[in-house]
Length: 354
Image 1: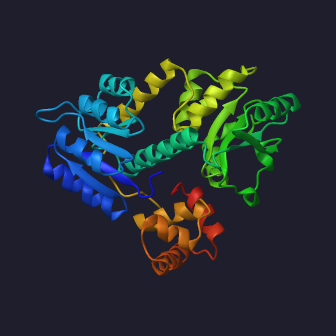
Image 2: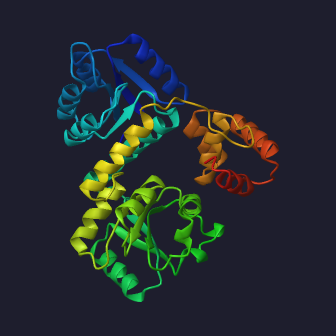
Image 3: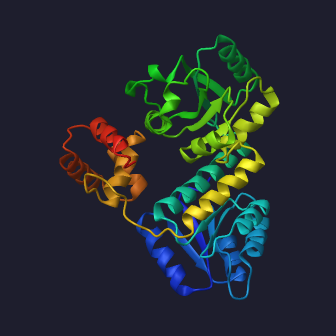
């Protein structure tokens, strides 16, 4: 498994390479660059690369073709296509050819970073699945009061040792901040057991992501319309499982979701892609809006705090000293007028900062 987060940038414009390299190196990634397919192949042959960002349109080469050739060298390489001219058709072509994701050069840096991190996580999960390394078992949180559904998941986990039913809650009302768990891989939310909370889905999912920061959110016993599913997907839901789903289909759905993809119909996927592309085509980067005038670094530290990381772990993740982390946390406490990590994180979630 790759220990450092290494990225290969492929673009025939030096200015673009320099811009992305300086930005990504500043936040801790190891960056390699290439202007041609030949140079990219040489880098892959010499270094361990996990994620590759490739320009769609270069003067003499096609980004999708270059990407396909690079994946022949490393099938687990996660390729993110980057372009300044996003179109729905090109996004579909990229996905069909096995690319991991597709972004516009005009997208927020935070959005691009999220996709890069998703690519790293997906690659690590795939390596874990292939090697069967210890600790690759997937913990499940179930939010449902139906005994038959709970028994069904108990049986599923006995038959599928890769999964473990870690805890069951009767409804979302019973989940408290003390239940924080960063080891959960999936949170399964029964639609019929949580109708009341679904009236305010944005708040509900923000809280769940705070309590279970590394988990993928999945709706079960699902009877939503396509419009309702679109809204929930935009809020972070990764899939919808109908009532009485077959075990093999559930196993396939979990594998897809844990790998970083979504379990939805092809029609809904196309609709979501079209919406995201329209939304991002004319967006320009701007600093996150917040009530407390937090810097980008302070927001990153808040996000790490929400994931349950210690000061030392935050310093390792962000490539800064532990002393600097403590100084940033003190500044956060003063700006937000709080005295503890929990208070800071809860205020940040309420203000939609993280």
